[in-house]
Image (cartoon, rainbow, N blue to C red; front, side, top):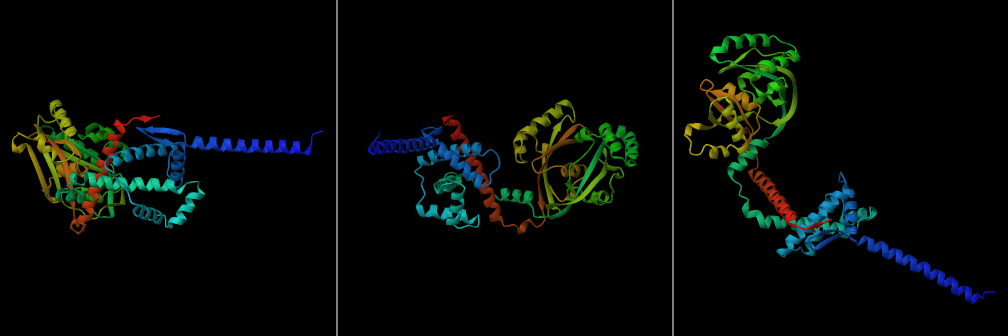
Length: 411
């Protein structure tokens, strides 16, 4: 018969085995959390960091695959940290604490309250500290490194103001369009076709006619245009267009070597620049050959070379001055055929639907900008700071791409 002492020894041994087993299990779990899952050059990201960042993103209600987003963000953090380490960049504790408090305040919470929310969602405060620290260090690093490279000119500010405008409700129209080519030898036939189209009241009929007779690229989709502000159209046409009821067509509108017709599809109020533009800046580059295969091919090549009107000066370099016009005119000064082309364009966009010299010259038309009334009341310093921030962000993104391209990242 086993003695009480022997039974006690066995019990203690069993308890010791259980405790030891639990300890080993805890150690194994801890070791699993510390397992490196990503290597960025000579620095690792652990499973714990990856799990914590995903939980933090969940608290932030970040959409998408949180694990993949966390992985990408942590790789970028390592790249940023390594680059900043080269320059000895660091942040003081008081500055970091203030940044944490500001971060919590954006959620209308104190830092202790925000910390409690994180804890309830399984996020350690150190995870937030790491997240915020990299963010403020990188922001300051980018400013100090690239600020001198960013020069904001008055032209940059004017362009931004022209594109931004002030926003109020304004009328937009949804139209179908047809422009019939009408050189002198075909003027009578074009006029007869235009008279027939003007009597149409069916969308299907008008769109079929557009596919048959329109000289514009929009013929491919039946002449359908997107919603456009009525102020984009020439002042002399706005009343004519606005008087149309749905499906009604304008009377034929004569333009040089052509006839234009518009069919009303809809009207709506929308947020657009507050007032009609005081002036419109545009450029016209003239290409010999008209709408021949060679002329259209050259126009396509120029389109691929330019992003702004300034780029056209390089295209026209060493050519006669009359090959390029750059004009700033009030809407009422712009001829109908050019105004109708510009109405469809945003700044930087082009068209080459027009010709001059009896079709011998192709007009490569580019919208530089619309100068809106009231732009003088805009805070130019605010606009300048916005442009600077955008350009710094672009430089930072480019630097990060370079760092990623030269890094050794596993897996």
